[in-house]
Length: 45
Image: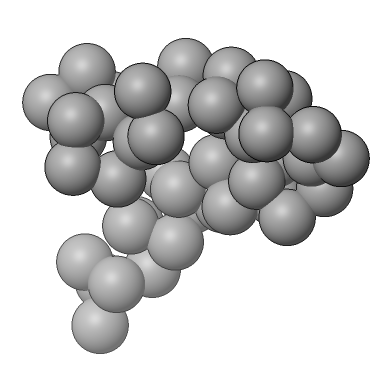
């Protein structure tokens, strides 16, 4: 339960950014909000 809550806090900015992005380029810039280790997995760039 605690891990899920922590993950939600860490990634909420990323998911908000991708949902609010109006262009593909803006959506790709959201990857900067992810930890470096996960940018290749969850990010688009």
